[in-house]
Image (tube, rainbow, N blue to C red):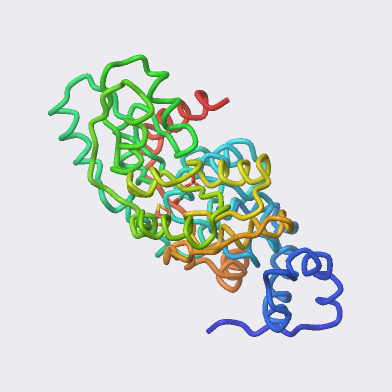
Length: 333
Ligand code: 13P
Ligand code: SF4
């Protein structure tokens, strides 16, 4: 049973500065529900020397209310590699928490709901990678971080959507095996002369966007800027003005300050980013990631109170996976 926490004058006072920031995106009737959790989570984090890392797709009350750091997959891995906190709470999906654990085998890494998976991570196993390596001997394996530790352990180097092209080019090779996102792989292939051998994984959120949908935005809102995530199908990316990771999209909005923009990615992104850019008008398509939405303030609180759910990895696999993750971080310095 979820705890019901009272919205007291003390809670209102302790969270007022947060509500002042997010009042444009969180309705005032909702605040008394979120605020007691936010106050208690922030208190407990300090007591336990815990750091809360949140992906850009987390809901606004998490992103603005309790996160110590927000970012894309690369940013979260970089932050996890630097922290001196004793406990890392990863508010995102399981592969992100696993990456944090690979980088911090001695720390407690928690994910508030173990069911927070990912269709890309589910599309491939370590055995699949071993079979591919037999089929293409000597061809380097570049693996998107959206994979299990087992898959990373079989890989030469990891990448995220913000450094995939750069990493494939830096390998100085004619061919790479790129796993498991077929669309990100096709995007990388379109940006380099390196031959890219693809897998058939897709993100269940980004594959739903269509070129027609983007084209319609141009008709209904002629001066709109369209920015898209490279997990989208190629014909969708062809319609976009900019393609980048979630952090890349935020930087684009910051740099270009478009009058009107649509972010072709998960629902919460626009809500989270709109807070920082009140002069930009965000058109908000909504394709929701059910895995990211498993994380809630009540289960973050339970995670901190009961130190659950702790990521446990086979240490042999984790230490092999560390090589591929470290190499990615080296390339991205
Ligand atoms: P980035 O935040 O790294 O762009 O990744 C998007 C994503 O789908 C993560 O699950
Ligand atoms: Fe996986 Fe797509 Fe959800 Fe990201 S948005 S966690 S890639 S299913």
